[in-house]
Amino acid sequence: MKITIVTVAYNAAAVLERTIQSVLAQRGVDLEYLILDGGSTDGTVELLRRYDSQLTNWTSEPDQGIYDAMNKGLHRATGDVIAFLNADDVYAHDQVLAQVMGEFRDPTVGTVYGNLVYVDAQEQITRHWQVRPFSEKLFAQGHAPAHPAFFARRELLLKTGGFRTELTLAADYEIMFRVLHMTGYSARHLPDVLVRMRAGGASNNGWRSVVQGLREMTSAWTINGIQPPLTLWLRIVYRRLGQHR
Image (tube, rainbow, N blue to C red; front, side):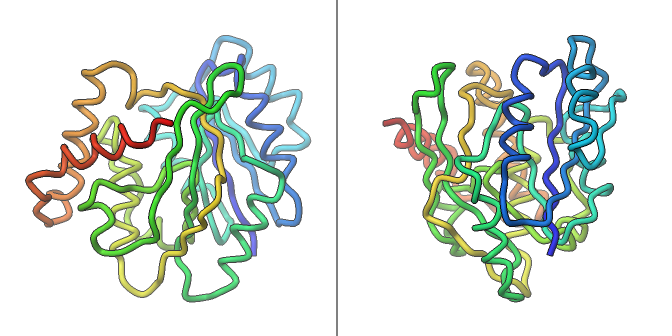
């Protein structure tokens, strides 16, 4: 089985190399690595050229935003399993992908997800994102997998139609919501840290973005024909506050 990792980048020359090295360091897997740059002007393209022989494919062209670029990656991927790793995130160790792919040897498993930690510029852990094993109550209780530590069979992601680009901050939440509620496959939770994420990001960039993200998470339920709990916002905020250590 082959796994495809997709990284979407834009003006990420200062941080992208650590991500690339993290993926290329993975051992024991048939790896396809795609990088989609949004037309950077800061040296990202020059960095990608240096790694040209080690990447499966990379492009640098304008896009309509991060989720549009992710959709391009989804449709260009050829792996049996696919995951999206942000341009400033790294895998926790060099056996992460091998560990994940071991779970997919079970043909009934459609998705695998694990835990994540946020780190600062000095690589010190500032927050833990720990998720429970999947149940129908997972999202209703305010839980959700961290999308960089979420892996799915490509066929399942394609069946969803990809990321909803009308959602600007929570399309990753919405696609995980859809995939995890699809029938026919089971979800496997790994109680280990799989990804180290740099603190920040679009959905955490100020209170306005946080509120917009919460609104879009609510929309993820309604556009899939499910009424969200009245207390959904409170539960999500409570879980996030509890993730700080």
